[in-house]
Amino acid sequence: MMAYSEDHIALAAEYALGTLSAEERVQVETMMSVDKDFAAVVEAWERKLGVLNQMVGLVEPRPEVWEKIRVAIGLAGTQEAIVHPEAPQPVAAAAVVAEQPAIDRSTLDRSNVIDFSVQAKRWRGVATGMTAIAAMLVALIAVQAYRPELLPAGLRPKAAQQVVQAPAPVAPPAAAQSQYVALLQTDAASPAFILTVDAATKNFTVRKVGAEPQAGKSYELWIVSDKLQRPRSLGVIGSNDFTSRAALAAYDPDVVNQATYAVTVEPEGGSPTGAATGPIVFTGKLIETVPPAR
Amino acid sequence: MLTPAELVWLLAAVAKGDEAAFERLYAATRAKLFGVVIRILRRQDLAEEVIQEAYVKIWNSAGQFNPGVASPITWMASIARNRAIDVVRKRSETSIEEEPAAMEVAADTPDPLARQEMTEELKRLLECVGRLEPDRQKLVLLAYYNGWSREQLATKFEAPVNTVKTWLRRSMMDIRECLGLT
Image (tube, rainbow over all chains, first blue to last red):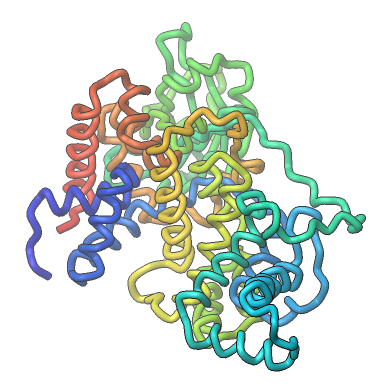
């Protein structure tokens, strides 16, 4: 792979990050299409950053979305009269388009005896011969299927008002929630535990990654903050791969977010005194991984 | 969610035009992809359009997926996210930022902390992001997760756009060095 200037690499990185303007994005996409090596640089960034999506929560789209995808790619089953109140069925949309040329033709050519089969054949010929028009029809069908409100009244598919099926309930949007994550470690190369905190519920989960079990000892997690008089125990961790608790619920969000989290080695079962007795072996601070939507 | 190996297999079947495989692929991945795009678009209707376009593209280009290079979900999420960013950039240029229809959306289920999914790659990346100054961490993550433009970031961080541009560039170069990218 050829060497690219830092400007090029930064452009590729910012494309993957998403911060370029519309114009710059088009520029990058053009460069990618003519320069495979540059495309590889962009795609490498997309893969590196793409792992961040592992932290994004699942949101179910409505069932209508699948129907529209099926229609768009022409999968079997789309000929059935599948009708949703908000999604005009595709056959009806296509029918409206088919009517359109017929109207034009009759205005151009009133004197002709209308022979439906000839007319249909002729329009079929026109459609297959003129890909631009075909593309426009596809676009029109797409608009009718997805955004009928964008069309002039005459081109809108008839709303399927007779349908009684209730629209799929849209999950009420929850308040924007952040997740925080801290790598608890001695050095950058070897995280021992991964602490994740859900901002809304303050539930936390500790995942054991590199920490070795110590015979006759327990790992104990502490929250350390200058807003607290002394480190407070969040309990013993590490006996299982995952430990989930609500022990942060009593703390202020500011304290939770800004605190340092420390792991000490304690006698089996945890510190007998309520204060840390053993050495601090791992520490970390939270970073916000899924910031609020605004 | 299926395992990456199962998704690779499904994508290979989709590349051959296997409709049942495509339906399974959709069922296994739709909530993740929708979660990604709705954070960026913050409108149900736009997010649905983007997700439709993304899956049509996945259907058409499944043969181009290279399992030796990318994980299936990363590849698919990139397609959806790129489309979402394109839409949001074009829209913001016509300044309809504060549409009343815009709504707050967020994950309805904070992914069970991505238990099976927190890969070594994510840990490494988070480590590198974590080395940035706190403001830069936030800058990078807001840009990635919410699809914010430089202008939106400039407003949020009360800094000139050009300064934000420099910060973004510096941050990405720092991450690159930390990850050992060439």
